[in-house]
Structure formats: C-alpha cells, structure tokens
Length: 301
Image (cartoon, rainbow, N blue to C red):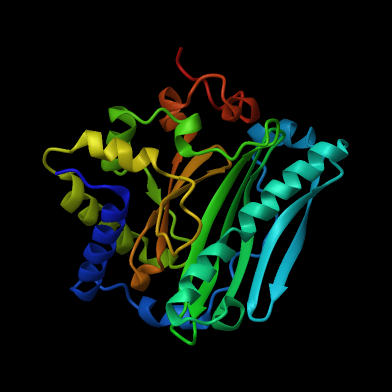
C-alpha cells in the first residue's frame, strides 16, 4: 500500500498515540510539557580535536535576535563580522525568514477559532547551534506552542544553511538515501538522542520503530520504495513546525541527526544520530559536508 506524506503523518501520530496509552507509556512525559519548555538556550559549539583547525578558520560570530509580539517569542541567530556585508545580510534574511515562517502556521492554527493569532497563540521558541562551520550552519529550534489556553505542544524544526550559496539544504541534498542507508536506520545504527526526555530514549525509540514496522514492515519485508520516499521528504519545504508534524535533519560534530515526529506524550519529536564514519558511503561527493569535515568524511567515488 502506498501512503502519501499527509497520510503517513496521521498514521504515525495515531500509532504512537495508541502505543503511548499501552504498557509502554513514557513515565512522567504527559505532564512535563505543562512546564512549557523554552528551548535550548546554549549557543556554545562543541569543537573536537579533529575539527579545531576548521573552527579556528571561522571568521564570523553569531548573536541572538528576538521576535516578540504579545505572547509569542521567537529567538533566532544572526551572523556578524562575516566581512562581506551583502552576503551577511542575505544569510541573515534567510535565517530570520526561516525562523519566523512558523507565524504562518500559527495564523492557520488560530483560524480554527476565528481569532487573531497574536491574541490566540502563546509560544516561546529558542534555538541551539548544532554545527557552526566555515561552510555550513546547522540550527535546531525548540520550544512550545499552545492555542487559546490549550495544553502546550512541543515545537521543533531545524535548518541546515549552506553559507556559500545561501541554500537551505534538505537531507537528500547531501546524503544518498538508498537501501544501505535505510538498513542502517532499521538496524538501529542511529542512536536515540531525545533531548527533552533523555531517560526515556529506549521507550520512545521502540515506539518509533513499532510505528515504522506498522507502516513499512521493517521487521519482516521492508517496503524500501516507500521508506526511501519517507526519508527523502525530510526537511521538505512544508515542514514549518509541529503543526505539520514532519521530519528534520541536522549536522552535529562529525555526525548526522534525524528528528522524527512522535506522539505528544513522548514530546512530539525524537532525535536520532549516527556518526559520519558509519555512513561515509552515503555522503554525496563534493557536497558542503565534505568541505567542513574533510578528514572525517571520505565519500566513495
């Protein structure tokens, strides 16, 4: 059976909600979002020994900017000291527009109650820099959104920005998504890195894999065609926030992260990471990742 993107999102949500209610309910998760997480506020960038030289060559800095209107607060990074003012302005406009595109989602969300979104939506979004390189900037936004007094939902999305071209990258732009890549995910080579509920990583990961098995039979006869489409749609242009419930990717220090939509009770999103050494044959030759990680990534020809 073939599922389109909207159907998959709905089925994943329903399956995960069903699993949450059962015996594997994540301890303490259902009430923890009531604390309204404001997102990761650290802007520090981890620099491994292998990457110190490339980090030293970085000429720009990042500063935090804030959009605030009524009960909506969105924080996002801006580049300074790049040394090329037109390029810097263009990149900063891209970062700002990407961070604020969720406002359109909020407007659609609020239209359901026929009220101005500024008076209906409460939201607090912050960000964490996952990777700050000479050629690539990877940022993850996290926080909460709630409609007209309803319980808060975790809001999460990422952006991978090519600093040379100004292009926002999708996973398929730098990773060859084929059967070997899919098999690594099925075999759980990707490690669960849930940042919201780290103590429940295994439970949440088990629920993700049970849902994927329901949709794509990953434990018996994997439907590779639909699985390939599932991963290729990661970071698609429609993935603006939790309202659309899509998957995202990010670059961390010598690793790739994939963010998968899960149930509200599990925090709406779960992070999975794999080292570049594990997927070097899937890294597309000549792409931006190779420029920031020349020693760690050696793509096959």
